[in-house]
Image 1: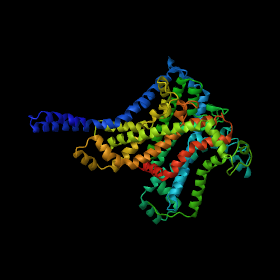
Image 2 (image 1 turned 90 degrees about the vertical axis):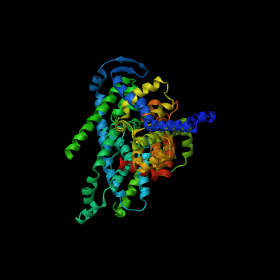
Image 3 (image 1 turned 30 degrees about the vertical axis):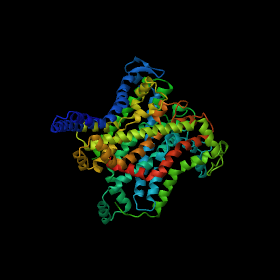
Image 4 (image 1 turned 135 degrees about the vertical axis):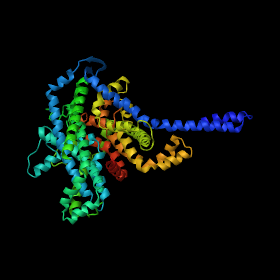
Amino acid sequence: MTDETAVLAPSAAGSERPAAEGGDRRQLWRSRRYRWDLRWSPYGFVAPFFLFFAAFGLFPLLYTGWAALHQVELTDPDAMTWVGLRNFTRLWDDAFFWNALRNTFTIGLLSTVPQLAIALGLAHLLNYKMRGSAFFRVAVLTPYATSVAAATLVFVLLFGRDYGMVNWVLSTVGFGPVDWQNGPFASQVAVSTIVVWRWTGYNALIYLAAMQAVSADLYESAELDGASRWQQFVHVTVPSLRPTIFFTCVVSTIGATQLFGEPLLFNGGAGATGGSDHQFQTLGLYLYEQGWVNLHLGRASAIAWAMFLILLLIAGLARLLRRVSR
Amino acid sequence: MRSLRAGKPTYVVLGVFTLGSLFPLVWTAVAASRNNTRLAQTPPPFWFGGNLGHNLSVAWTDANMGAALLNTVIVAGTITAGTVLFSTLAGFAFAKLRFRGRRPLMALVVATMLVPPQLSVVPLYMLIAELSWTDRLQAVVLPALVGAFGVFFMRQYLVHALPFELVEAARTDGASSWRVVWHVVFPAARPAMAVLGMLTFVMAWNDFFWPIVALTQNGSPTVQVALTGLGRGYIPDQSVIMAGALLGTLPLLLVFLVFGRQIVGGIMQGAVKG
């Protein structure tokens, strides 16, 4: 608006000046502005993302590597002492690190595999024509709306050793009480259950979306060949969903390596140790313990890099598997 | 799509899944309506007691839930507004505008989705400590104000939902880029903006890892951080803990009750095109 008045002003004041010249200049200015706009405004539109990403994403990412080579204490983050690779060599000799790595792996397996398997079956059922399909979809997604904190606190009660609902049900069908919080394997199953509960519905919807994109012709020809529903599921649905299954595997694996809130809060009063004997301490929790309980930010950075390297390793393995299976 | 009808077994199995999904939430309310003594008895309670009001008020005052809820509304609201606005702008540029570096920049956006948040948590903490932002809400808001998923989501939507002709027509009429955004892009993107907004709000409300690093229970906690305080046994009463959990979950459950179908649609849409 201000540009327009600025251009119009002289021609209105100096009446001798021919109107055409003002029009030309205005035209020129407009087309220049138009080209300038066309050229640069795309960058204006993407700039906020990249500015914020540079400040809060890229810079920290690179700086983690630098911090991992230093001794840094949480109490005085400005004082950094160069220690080279010592944070990494310590990690290598650290029994708690390997313990956390092992736990992350087993809890990851215990949560990801049932989660995706159940989600696939659930999606298959949701794909049928039925009454109240919208209700069922929203209902199975509801756990997704529940926070890690709220969900874990409830499951702590449900998995209580003496008065918990799970053990009560188990005892009524004739099994002894299980110590869900202290048993090394039982506690990992319990933590995994929380993950499965929160994410199965979400994954089921992703599979459902992919199932609806599968062409009906495939099913018709399978039916003509006399395939049962189960055979159709195994030989038509699952192969058609392979890219989606791969995608959810990757996403769930990334999620599993970062597992943090569930083991933190499953641990009654003890905090970041992941159980009295570290029996369900994950890598994410161990990072938090090193950085914000033991105040060693440099070591926490080294753990972060170790986690990243493990993810890269998994990604590499997945690629390899994919190429082999093709 | 197939038109196979569901038989009775399908309804039964789905009913069981629905029960499994909803039971822990319902039972949160059941436990919140009892007292600690009753929760330490077998069999555990299955139905509501009369203690809900008392437990809610204890949780409200002792864990400072009122302030925590307000903080969370501010945090999640700002993150949602920022993410939706910036994602729409960037998504539009990547979907419909030509500019140098478009492809590599989009590849960079997608690549950022793969970086785990743990990798940047230490320097991010050092950064906000340097800025004296610890325990301030901007420490949680600013790093989450943009997200690669949002840009990706809006781009995928606008590629199909916004015809080139519409943008060209507005251009021919002499509209500047910003006018095009206001009069053409925003109206066309509105359904996707709504879905992205809801998904972002749910994620921001439930975010846990970074808030617990950046905020403390005694400063200006979000609901999730306040719940951690409850869980760590500052208040050892289990029924009060459940009341707190209920308070932290209820607002989102209400969102779900109203917009559940749209959220389901949004997740499925993002999945197919993703």
